Length: 178
Image 1: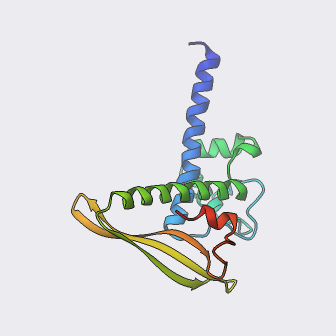
Image 2: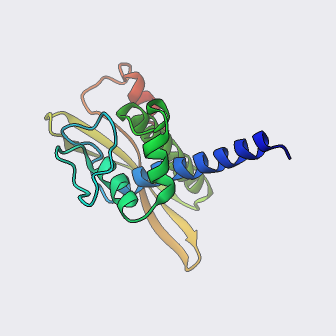
């Protein structure tokens, strides 16, 4: 192999590991119900030296990335310091895209499990968000065969504004249904 090809392969391997770190950090925040963003979550992701906490609250996502660097993740440190700004995948737009993609994967997995269930039902419930909008949450309850036998699972599959007419769902709401 020539040197340029080896260099390209190594770069691709580093980038793949870096993307995995970004996605896993977002998944961690979602699984633990930790908000990603802070007061100021744009700009350069600096290593804060021995202090992991930034001077301004730039969000849990960026804080967790700095924490990994502080914990000795040399790959992440190298890429945070040397990657071009448009290749760091830490912007709120990228976070939103990754959250949407992860949500679609979760929804697809839920639909797959429901399709293999012996029995299932839909459950709907309303809740009010911070903007006092009435939201309808739709979940599937189904039996799922695990290693220990059948278990009952209940997973959300859609959320939409409860007062929208059935013909007036927004594009986002239509995309968030089965």
